[in-house]
Structure formats: structure tokens, C-alpha cells
Figure 1 (spheres, helix red, strand yellow):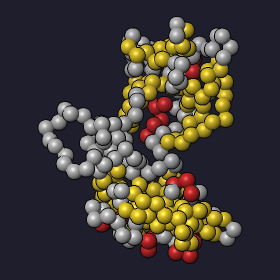
Figure 2 (figure 1 turned 135 degrees about the vertical axis):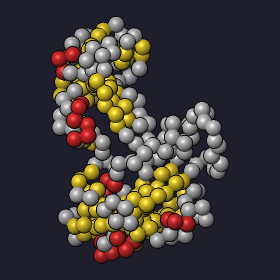
Figure 3 (figure 1 turned 45 degrees about the vertical axis):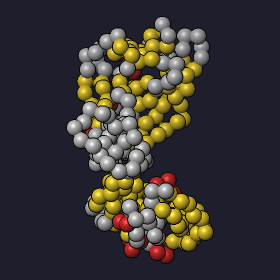
Length: 265
């Protein structure tokens, strides 16, 4: 996504169609202030409250927020003997979170003596997203990870002839599809449920996207009786910025092919 993945300038697969050269190591770090208020909750307690974040972009990885230790609730931090080493940032020390009987092992990491190329990490720490129960960007709860300021989602209606196929079998077909383009990810084509010509079966699988919301999944029942599990998904109640895909279905499975105007996409 953004700067560090796919076509981004700090990506290992950055395009050659440029008129500049970015020197430095193949694995790049770029950090900048992230001054929106960010809070994290654990076991019913706010354990992080910061307006002084530093967002680190690292080649091929999602951005990570590093915060001053002073913005963490010191009463819930428990030093850990666990350590790891990063060749780009240095030796990492860890803390666990403890609130009453609830413990999240090694949920917080920091670089007490970061490598010379990353001195701005000194005195800061980061938290594993999934170790916390809830995250808030200002007063909005956010899921999966913080949004990347270098990522955008464009949603456009399209009159292209879109088909979802399983070999010669048409699974879904539309000339009124909706195209979703998200930075760094494959384009997704969303179709109405009435455009699907094979049975769909509900799945318990759910995922969350910080740009689109919570997705629920469907299995695709083929004419031969086989079920392609979680081959389609929908956002019944997407975030406001992705409202155009509400209730629409997109497809992705190794046995399915999406074709737009005769071209595989």
C-alpha cells in the first residue's frame, strides 16, 4: 500500500518509469508525524492516548504507529525477557500488558538503542494491533490497522461487460458493475446479487477493512455441486466513504476468473 508496496517509490518492486533515483538500502524506512489523537483500549481501560504519533513506513509492510512511552499507561506495562532483532531498526525489547487477570504477552515493543539510521525510534514504542480490544482515530473506532495517508480507495460505476467464470460456466455477469480501486491491491469488481446465476451459501467468515468496513462471505455452489468456500464477499453496511459498494458482491478464488470486456483482470 502507499509508499512501500507495489508501485510505491519505497517498494522493492517500484516501477522503472521515473526520472529520479532513490539511493539507500533496498529496505527503506520513512517516518513522519501522525498528530491525530489515537487511543487504544485493553480490558476496559485506555492504555494509550497520544497526539504525538510517529508513523513508520517500511518497505513491503503496513505502516506502524510509534508513540512516546509517556503516552502509554505505565501501570499496565510489565517488562518481558523476550527480545528480537531487526537488521534495520536494531534490538527490540518487549513489554506485556496486564490489567487484573488479563494479560497480553509481549504486546508492546521498542528499540531502546535503535540503529544509527533510525534514531527517531528512541523513546518510542509500538503495540500489536490485535493485542488491544479497540482502537480509535480521534473519536472514530478503526479496525485492522490505521489508515495509510498514502492509500486511497476509488469507487466508480462501469458499463464494462463483467463476467465471473468457472471455466466455461458463467457464475455472474453484469454491464452495471462497480469498480473498486484500492492503492496497492488488485482491482475489485462488485456486482449486484441478481447478477449471480449460481446459488450462494452464507459463511461465518468475517473480515474488517479500515477503508471499507466489515465484510461477510459467501460460498459459491457450482453446477457440479462443489462449493467454493468464501469465494465471494459483501459489505452490507460499509463505512461512509465506501457506501457505493453496500450490498454488492465481489469474487476471488483460485478456480474463478474475472473477465471485463473479454480481458482477464
